[in-house]
Length: 312
Image (cartoon, rainbow, N blue to C red; front, side):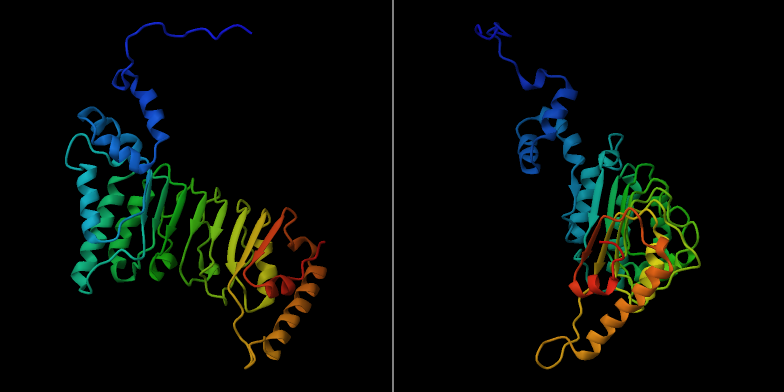
């Protein structure tokens, strides 16, 4: 093979600022958050150009009310060149701090609400805050979520009254993943509340005494996380409600032990009894087991034994 051809024989230097903005935007997506921040301080050109790829990153470092105020200033909501529509992911962690006074809590939530209302192009929204004390403002948050056209991943703790009423639009029609980190029975979902496009449902914090409504069906769900049910027959009814399930995760650990640290005889009897009941259930209802289920993950191996998997 001969020598490689020389693509550019010109001695003129190629400056980054002369590149097309789309090319620059792609290059900057390969940089880390720290590198993008460093790039912004090099010159006025990159101070503006690096905003778009930086805004697409996930914002999950809110720790205090002051950090919310700083982010609101970054969004430039009061200017014609607002950056809010560039934001794709937002995470408001549980450790977001406020003073113990009620007024401060409401002020903090109003800051969260203002950010969510402005960032309508979100694809991922995680709100781990306890919203019980601000249930009135939660309706405003629900309306903001309802207008997000591209939301795919929602993680939220709605107050109990809000879930009971089934706020219209909270669970977007295009939603793919939903996490409800609350102690709430799955059977209390109003009919039609969960979107048909939902593929992953995480209810691992739901109460272990949950019940199911008559003949529910969530055919699109492929991944499911639930706690171990105290009543073993509920597990059979649960799997029947998710005919398209492929991956099942059962959370929680058995902690009842005797004084020597081994499982108590009462607990062992309970597990054995659950296995016997489920065996009878699978034999009587062979179609209840999801035919596409390919993996089961458990926090405690006893759950897998109690499940009495009807296939090898």
